[in-house]
Image 1 (cartoon, rainbow, N blue to C red):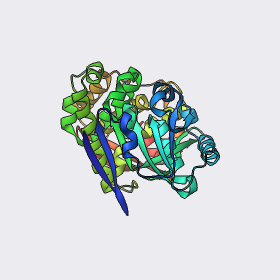
Image 2: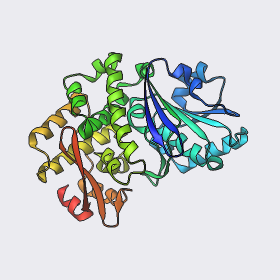
Image 3: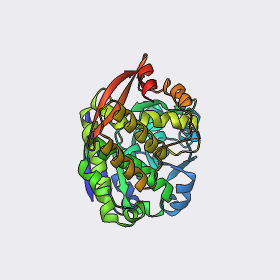
Image 4: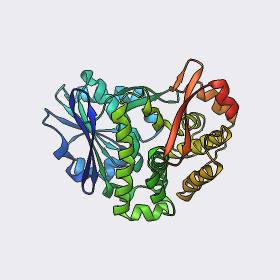
Length: 342
């Protein structure tokens, strides 16, 4: 078991714990509280029915369509009906949608109650549940309503990934590769030549991959909790990915991120920031784990969706460009300039 800590102003650090058998012990990480509530999705509720049976359970849907203010309101209502007070505690037990929604609910119910996460997907372990971004979609646009608030703990249990569908595992790998491109060339090298199926079956290697990926994010978040500077690097591939997700229901988040990374690679090459050799290397790794590097959404449709991206300020937007494997830069461009690049 390994533990990373992310500082929180005025509070004890947020703990990210990586290992095996953690989900079965999650209550050990919950501080003293008046009552404990678990938010989970319908599939996880069935899979972990025996483990979760003793707790107050609130079940939500699994898709992006369920990641809305309407869902938040329903959870708030259920918490009130079940007698949750300011000393209650909420655990988000599930994938990235569950942790995003739970963090937002806990941050807003009675002006904030304690919360932690048991991350049951690779995507949630390496990205969604780490770093304190909690939010929901609005009008089909990703994470337009939310807060910065880090959980007390995030449990990344390698055992729970055994039953993860391969498509979801590959989707999580997009965030792993993203982190490697941002700030860990050795992680990138470690992944090259390892098929997704082999990585999933090798828990020792997988734990190392999750550890290194979370370490990248933890280092960056510790420097910039509210995304005023260096944390923008974590948006590599996401500007285009969110436009894809707004425009099409065919791609899960990690697949859209992979396409977004491949597209921004081409932009970086056209601007002379990234070499063609590094572009090919990144694309090869994305395809090697079974991720797409292109999509059928028309560019004009993407351009329209980009205008609503929350990273936009006025007529400009912050774009993350890869410079080489292990190093990226943030560049501010007008939407017109970025449209031309696309």
